[in-house]
Image (cartoon, rainbow, N blue to C red; front, side):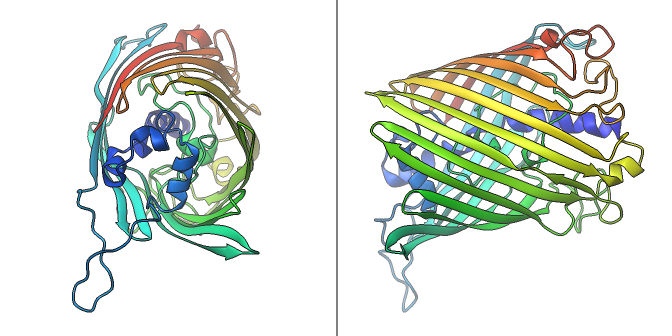
Length: 439
């Protein structure tokens, strides 16, 4: 169980770097619009970009032009909706992990292929497969397929649709939730902390379907359900070697209000998930995780420049009946609180300077957060906090040069000697440099 938790932490860190999926040039080729119409800087969506996603990645003025016999109208793009992305990087850790080489080069850190665009007059989406240097193979990445339409409700416009996706919050249109939240890109070579909420760790390991609606361009709601779908595992699912095997279905909910006044834009919302899981099995004792969360997004243009800010707070309450029975926890009831804040100033869609704070706190559990050199906790506490300073330069809209400094003030429960092997939180600080190309 202890080894499984460490592996999960490493996987979560790797998944956090799979972010740029929505900045896909095939959308630009099909619509004739430049990338910065939908993105302030990828993957941050502009108001038009949020509307475009709500509409199923389809422009509403697109009409079918071809017929085959007496069949219904057929709409095919003159462009093959394919794009590719490559990211190369270098990561330097402040204090080298024992028996490893510092200055970890990712060439590439990841390579992605996208099928992204409008597939019919009301149906579109993006599907991504990604090669990662750490795994040395391709795997299914963030995918969101949509049907969208519009009508009237109470005399006001209602944009509604159905989404099929493989990552809770990836269907969201804001950049404050885990799926599209900061950091937009990050190292795959750092030391991962022990604890993070379940809602952040199900990406590409589940399959879900849901319905959403935006009423009067103000009130947004989304309800989805998810089942486990383990990539690379045998089917039907046996659950062996998997930390999360969803019992029944796991509901996901989302509600948000957006408002513009003058040059200011604000979104306030809530989202969450309720997961019952069989660890390493498909029957027997269950662990339950409930993750009610809150978020905000603020935007303020200054001429051709933009200031934005995002924040989310996730409270996870867990009842670990199965893990406790297997001797993996000292108590059944546990909790985590995760807070993330970031703000970016964009200068003419060419430069971006970001500052961010992050914190995860929770109750102590000597088995759940066990001691281990580098990756463990000497006091059985998961508390981790720190900051990020990042600068990005975009010479053109599909090339990003980024340098980021990630600093820790606390790691796995302490600032100094957190692992019992004299490693300090600041020893895990990283300098990350990346070149990102999308074409």
